[in-house]
Length: 196
Image (cartoon, rainbow, N blue to C red; front, side):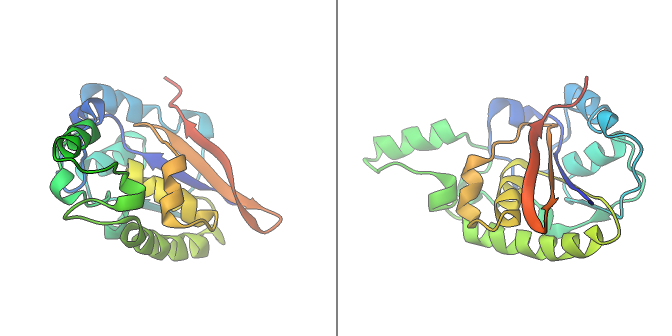
């Protein structure tokens, strides 16, 4: 059975600090580059039917360092547009809301102020999954993207609403494997670290 392998890019300075990184195009750290070099080591030799990659340099560089030579850049795989939260941490935003007397906030439930909500990210991911399902007829597919978009992707793969992505944490340079069991989309592995 063919597999969809979902990879989050390697570490960046902002993934370490917890800053929301949607539209900002920042590079991998030296550690992120090292992570990327070993990201797929334990998968064995594979000829992917398709390798779909976010246009952000951190995702493209991760694919390159993992040894992938032929990629297709897919705009729909960009990270969540965080709008007013870009470059800020969740803790900073929650403290600001508390100081203003506002209630709790959660990205997957409430969306990003001035940016996307879960439904918008879900619509993008659904377009990617149409392509992925067609390519899985020919073999394994690799997707190299980001944290929150990948979380929505796994939710949509399983037939859940985009907001259910909140339950699928994925760390930098980690991956998941999605496949089918008796024709039903399933999550086989999630948040698997690189081997080194």
